[in-house]
Length: 484
Image (cartoon, rainbow, N blue to C red):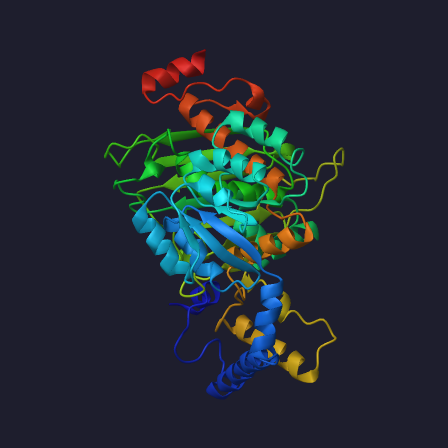
């Protein structure tokens, strides 16, 4: 691994880096070690029994509907969340139900019928982690049962359900919290990049590239609902929806139009969703996002090709950010963001301004690539109010980042943060960052992206309230749909 790759990926290297002596490395690494030990000491100051009593008084009792792969993952994280308590789990499959119980521990009630869980008066809030086609019916029933709801993405499956949610929430249930599982909204890195955009540090952000590539992707097996149109929104819903939301957030608007192509090119195993799709979203003021989803490669052309599968490249006239939320585990693939300043940003020209004068001959010059810079999170930024020790520790960490020995990492998994935030909002009546409007906008992008691919045409968002065409699954049907 080269020094530059180490700086971009957070990989550890042997020996020296950029002229750094062993003495310097040991000294700085020791300072970082002190920072870790200080943090642990502060956290342990309160007696354990006091912390437990405090947590119990602020816990929200929750039940989870769906303890398959995603539900088990959430339960594994929830085990460390203090402000929520699992009192019930539900799944139609006995094996999943037992695995869910192992993931969370304790003695929650077990249900096979989600309506029985909703009728349980001890359940204050509900987490829905079922296949996407079941989200709206369960969401509606949960709200009518008086529960707060955390629903995994996509919030809804059909265009009709978009309108049903708008009529149902918050109008009929104003005191209940509804949060969608779009965890990038709770990431320190993604929040920092949004702030960089707002402060003009990336210039005029006009283009985003995002992808989620897997090899081989989902394979056919029993109960694999993601592979069929009647139960799944395909790659756009299951993977792309995360990135569609990032683009909406960073651009500060929703798209005007989407076009794309999808194909069932490789995975000939009986599925009827596309295994390879490419989409282009057009936003106001000419902004665009390209999204790619593949089941035949896991390569990610960001971070020097050292990471795989998924991430975003956010490009502005003043700089570009490569960013990924990682694999969901803090190691070996943690969240990561790298900033590249634009070496020769173009001059700002206001509408109606005088055009630049060009001389005969070469009309452009090649700019050298920008140096990769780590994006500092709140814990590493110097405010001027630190103690001497805190200031030295931050300086040491920044020095190590600059040398490429290490990169800053988020302290906590954004999914865990999103779950804690949900329970806090249940207690306080706060509005989630990933609220119903965010969830519906994201679902609309999924629905219209699939329509664009099925009909092989540009689909404008103004068409949302028009009757949706029947999904076309053959080339002849697609051509017919495109011409009618």
